[in-house]
Length: 101
Image (cartoon, one colour):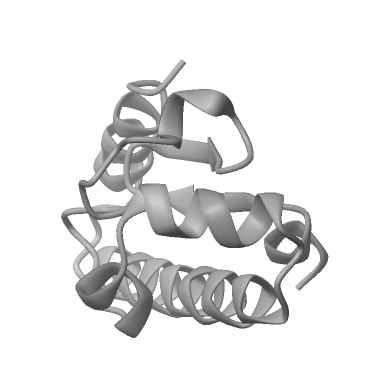
């Protein structure tokens, strides 16, 4: 995706701009709540390095993560709608998204 290629990664806590210097030495996973290949195998520091060096692997790993994030988000939304809990889901979603700002 375009966002992924440009280093914008969507997480359960908000958007991570992986090019930012704050991630240069950050050895934590991109999103602790995510089970995608990228989050399970690579650190923010490595993703930062790949993005800064314009490596094609960066675009691939970032895209894998973002697509997994959105597939999971849509599944959670469908479940909330089926259980008549979408209003609560929406409120919780926006509270979580504001944690990185």
